[in-house]
Amino acid sequence: MERDLDWTAQAPMTATGRATTSASPEQVFAVLADHERWTEWFPNVKGVEVLGPAEGVGARRRVSIPGATVEERFIAWDVGQRWSFTGTEAKPGFVRSLVEDCQLEPHGDGGTAITYSMHLDPAPLARPLLKLAAGTLTKNLDKAMAALARRAEQGT
Image 1 (cartoon, helix red, strand yellow):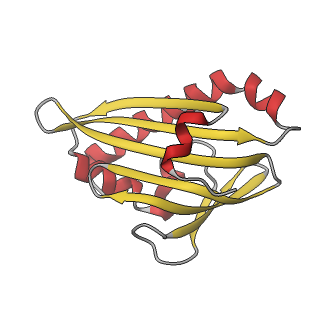
Image 2: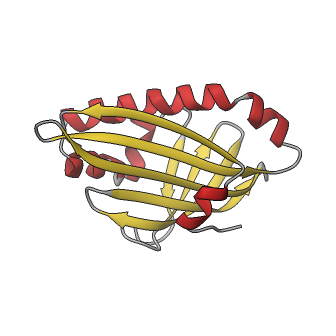
């Protein structure tokens, strides 16, 4: 089920990764918005296919992860500030609802604090497994945000 950002406050499960970088919020956002290159820095992302417009609220994409694909529609696209999507379909159906939200805040002398949160409502059969994997999910998001920070520092 598609959700909006208000839903994140009541999501049954949330995992958050964080990092800081010397790159500007606009540089970090440029890496986030480069869909096809996510495989270079986000662990477990095996492929990204743009399904419609590539930018802006309403943009759509399909992300392949081990054993699953997730179709996404963007619900926030504020360059240098916020980048968020809701899941529109997951195969297999391991989640009922999903919102991923990346917020970028100025930090230090021109750098950025990155906060990436994954909010989900797991499908009943997947709930115990996802609850057990919550710590691993947070560690993976921290690794991904550190890799995003490094990638942004290198330029696009």
